[in-house]
Length: 277
Length: 250
Image (tube, rainbow over all chains, first blue to last red; front, side, top):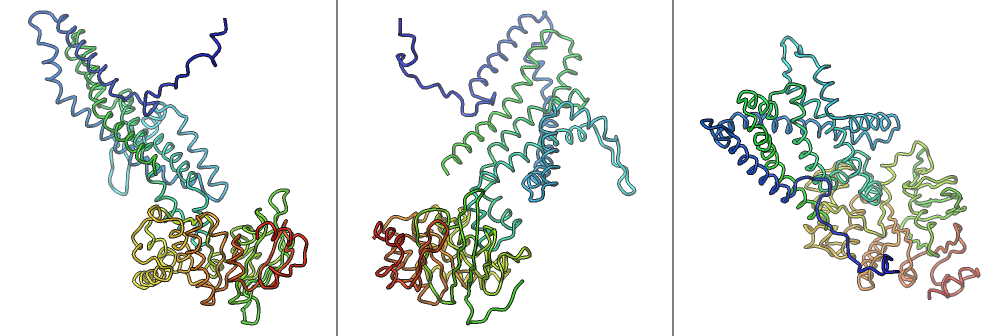
């Protein structure tokens, strides 16, 4: 019986199902999520006792509060991304520095913050940073969400640094040679020739990182920040209705999906566009 | 250490240059003198030696021993002012190496603007004049990706000329071009040579070398085997290796 040999079987290319292998943000996932949400609401309605308001009405009633919490998630993700990107750019330049000590220190910092669990970093920031800071004569309070944003900015910094290093090293060395032959100094070459060419190639993975940061912001609920996840838990304990549990969390999940899915699509489109150049 | 250079001395003086990459000796004692206004063609079998030699002249590659003096500036000096050296010697590469994110005009303007820190209006006027000189007026706002190979190479030549160097190094600049576009680049280089530019050209184009060179150097395995003016070189070469090489390509 030799028909089990691979060479005799009909050849089929392996399926390339997804544009971006690691992302949970495909249209298929969205449909599944929506179906799950609708199902859970229906089940909840069925479980609800007579005289209690419907699940759908309850969800809609709490939506404004949830929106406030979600706005805080988005704000934290923006700030963490902004701060992390600026710091990451500097750290990335340190990773490609000429002097060995600078490179070594940058490498250590990058590896530490890239391989540390984000939740652990959050805890460190919440516990180690003071609750208020004295600058000059004024006292500036540091609320929990600010410290959490700093905690999220640290892994962003490390990942952006790696992005920068990878992008700079992917520029052909002939560009460096040409710039050197034209008497450009190293920093000038970076500023005028290398980094502008890097921006395009850094954008899709950078957007991918942002989607990951958004999805990571509910971690801050564990350290006490009043964002969407915390508020969902508060709503559920206020309502004290077990049939509301699943629909409410699926509803929260849907909010995140609706925000992140367009980002994932835009990232994939940019990736395809830049592939050709 | 920089000494002043006078017209009687060679503009580029290479004495007993040695260069090894790991265990492989690439340049094994080469001495060449290039006077101002001279055009030198270096020919020879494919290998890293010729291109490496060019890169040693403008300090892109450091030499192991020997001396290279460019207009009074010693290249093998540990305290070498690289920027000062590279303002005197321009280089054009086989793969053009234009900056793809800037237009042709911007490519030409970048060095005088940022290295020499000159005024933008003057630099732009000169850049446009250079584009006219290489016969590419009308293509100022094209990106390198929109230009043909020959056009890109001419932009690369104009870009090196923008710093007004004393000498130009050409590293097999037509090797990556198709035969029709080779001619337009060679014409540009010949015009430069006729205008009095000191040129060191590594090339496989024997016809061009015969036409334009004042001296031809044949190198093989890191040494200069033979050299002479083209008339003598192509008809009366003395060394057996040279004869063998010429018989294969002519």
